[in-house]
Image 1 (cartoon, each protein chain N blue to C red):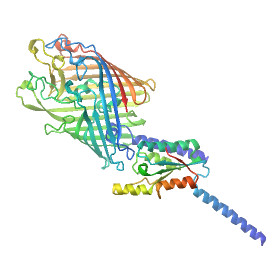
Image 2 (cartoon, rainbow over the protein chains, first blue to last red):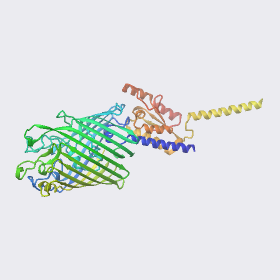
Image 3 (cartoon, one colour):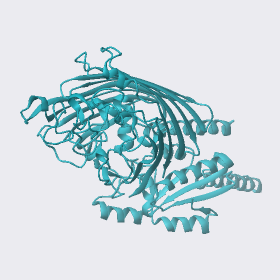
Image 4 (tube, chains in turn cyan, red):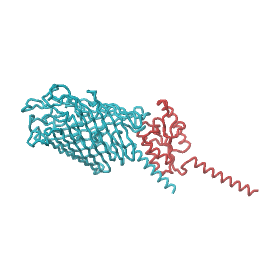
Length: 451
Length: 150
């Protein structure tokens, strides 16, 4: 009897401790990226991942307008835009993290560098250059207010904020790719080509990162892990100093019910909200002054994620106000020379709508058929340039996905994206609709290997 | 007279036996333990922390809580397991509740205090008496423990 009681007590204690362990390491990206397990992290853990990728589109050319017959930007493979199909090394990252002085668990660091082929390393398909994407130090001396300084991912939409090596898809949603992955431009491209020639980003994409200081932490209340983050940063991308004496402000709040497990694929229900507010200086070329004007850049969203047993789900509603990325002139590959009309002889450049808006949402559902096979489907839609009837564009993509896990660290992802775009307030005969209707579907395959 | 002496002797013997049982039960919390295991952790690799706790857990599953005496001796970089704020403190508490002993090294504690500028704050569950390696030698050579270093 006594033995049985002791065993029962042991089982209860083990269950309790297991639950405590799970809660202590509950997965949220704030903690996973900014902190280390207390007194249980190494001095320098080397880690990283590789993502060789194959992409295939038909490569349909621009079907109308001033750049008729040119390669369509959206039907080419970024960042080089030299082909519509082929292999590339989408990401190749290696990093080190840990507690530099292991006896002091209150200080940890995170370092990561990118060697792959993307908008970080090859902006505009130009000269390739490996870049540091993350380099931060976290100080955990104040209870409830950890402080992180340096270069790191800014809390925001789950799609972008999560560790990209566990992203269920290969390509981002339309809103994530266009409005959250920020391109920094000198001119908005609204007039004739300005002093900068072909209007294009003046540096790498921000990779949803910034240099700044963040206060954050997680609290356990009633079985929920509630996290907050407040941050200010330069708002000028990675590896660059501030350029306008205006700091971006970041706010993030989440609460997460953990069911089981830990780490990036924890089983949980999470609700979150976030907002970013900043200022950007850009030359409005149509104004003809050549002097930069200052505009707001605001982004915000509210969303949820769910993962339990074989089921996965996520949904988010997002909005953007100011500095709306608006693709290229006539949908042509940047640098293509116009054939006719006012565009004749003119190079196509990128465009920004500094004083416009966009809104979007996405829904993701997944089901693990077996331990090795997971099926996914995602629907996302974005309305861009909603302040004017003529400028509004609607992008809708349905992504069918399958993931095959060779093991816990290596998997194959296959995606087929059914892509549609339109100018909803313009007739179908308008050039904008003729061009957008030729957006190709996209097949992508990617191996992710984490080490 | 003889009868009284015999009764007195019997009483003394009974008392002595009772005391002996009490003494044994103090000396060993688990008198029915079939195995005595001392687990060493002296490695800086944080994975070893999880591993040593898993091994202790598995030993109890295999032999039963009362069937095995386990002592975890931490020294060198392994003493971090017994830091008060260690991420595994929940598991440590659970194992201690089921009879696992945790012992830290006094020499390591002193050396860490020199580097930190103050003594490390250890889990109150941990006993710190003398060098960890001496404790292991004593358990193995004098008390019949088997050393396991996961």
